Length: 128
Image (cartoon, rainbow, N blue to C red):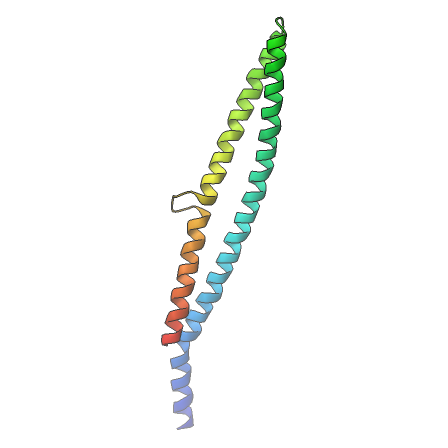
């Protein structure tokens, strides 16, 4: 009889153990996604600072160009700076879209989905 009880406990506990492992795996996915979110925010902040610096430099160049009539070199610098500012603007928009965009792959939506799965797993384990 003792062996029978052990076998029943072993097989009855397996689904619960399985879903406990799934909860731990899901928790680690949440940690990884939060780490990725932190890193993307750091990158975005660095690009934003560089964007602000270049934008200020561009404004100074335009003011200098208006005061200087013979500044052909300044016009070339303005064109190059405008291209860099536009490129950084696109990078900032892409990072913002990846962080909080409405598409399915945004980090905000991934975290919401993982937290929802976590809650579903916990409620299912309580039923077992």
